[in-house]
Image 1 (cartoon, rainbow, N blue to C red):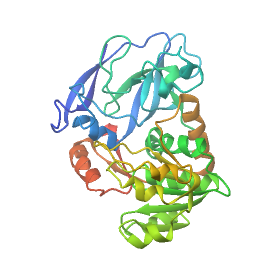
Image 2: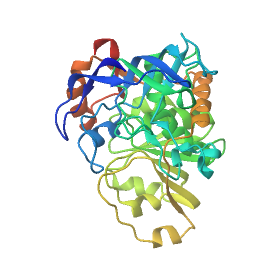
Image 3: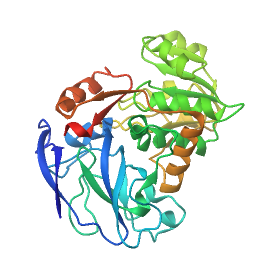
Length: 346
C-alpha cells in the first residue's frame, strides 16, 4: 500500500479537507498514475452531499483525471512509464455481461465500479482524483493524445464523453438540428462537439448572459428559455435536444420543440423526480431518453476526436484549498466552464 495526500469529504455535506488515503500496490495489470489535474464535476457535489442517495465516507471525489504513468505491472501491454493518460467515471466492471462484451461497460448489468463512492472487487472503497496518485487497471485507463494539454483534457473524461456518446448515438451531424440545453460544464462541451460533428447547433439557456461564449464555441443560434417567445418560435424545430441541466424541467414544454421522431436526451441528473404528460411523446412519435457516460473504447475515440478538432474544455485552474469555494460557485453557475484542480497543490 502507498499513502498519498488527498482531499476528502469526511461526511455528507461536510467541507472537504486535506487527508491521506491508501492506494493499493501495483498489480499485474495495473498502472500507477501521478495525477496532474482533476476536474470538478457537478456529480461530485451531488455525491459528496448525498443528493443521489446514501454514499460512502470519507469520500475522495473526482472522476476527470489526467496524469502521467509512473509505474506499470508486469502484465501491462498498453502503457509504459511516461505515458499521458486519463481515468474517467469507472475503474472496473464485470467484463463478462452482454454490455461489457459490447464495449458498453458503463451499462454493466451488475453495475460498474465507480472511480469513487463505490466498492472495488477487492471489497475496498474506491477513492477518486482529488489526490496525488491512483492505481487503475490498464483496461480502464485511456491515452490522452499529444494534441491535448492535460489540464483541458481532464474534464473530457466526464463532460466530454457524457456529451459525445449521445450525440454520436442519436446521429448528430450534417443536416441535423441539435439543441444543447444548459451552457455549463457539460453543455459547453456539447456545443463544441456537436459543432465539430457538423450539426446545426442551438443553445437553450436561462438567459442570454453567455451568448457571446456560446457563439464563439460553435453555436449557430442562442435562445433564452426564460423568454416565453422562445417556445413559440422554436416549436417543432429540433431533431435532438441534449439536456445537461441538473434541475427539474418542464419536460412537456421542451418536448414541444422536437420535430416528429425527435429525441430529448437527458445527461443532467436532477435529484428530484420530474413529471410528464405522455401525450407530449405520443404526438410526434418522440423519444424521451437518457444517456450515461461512454464505454472505454468510445472514451478513447472521443479523446482522439477532440485532439483532432482541437477541442479542450474551457477551464478555470484552481488550487486544492479552493475546492469548497468552487463547489459553491458551481451551484451558483459561476464558472466558465469547468474547474480543474492542479493536484500539485494537494
